[in-house]
Image: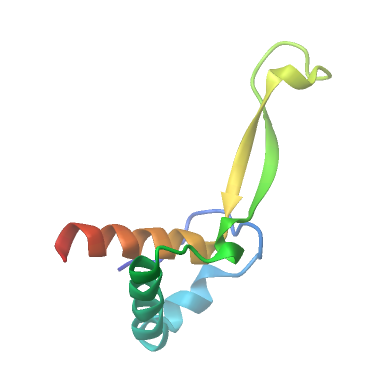
Length: 91
């Protein structure tokens, strides 16, 4: 499974290249964590956090309604979601 190299680092600012170089080391513990999460029906609370940044849409830049929120998830959350998606599709 590929690591999301071109995405923003998100809340914890953890470089994806480190995960990419350690993917064979962390893949087994990560999959066990996801399986336990599914068995217990619990999503890790640290992965529920995101960095919210305002993105300008149009019109008056000084008016808050003309901005939309964008959530930057951590690389761990994105990997968790990808692995969870894979597990749900193929197992």
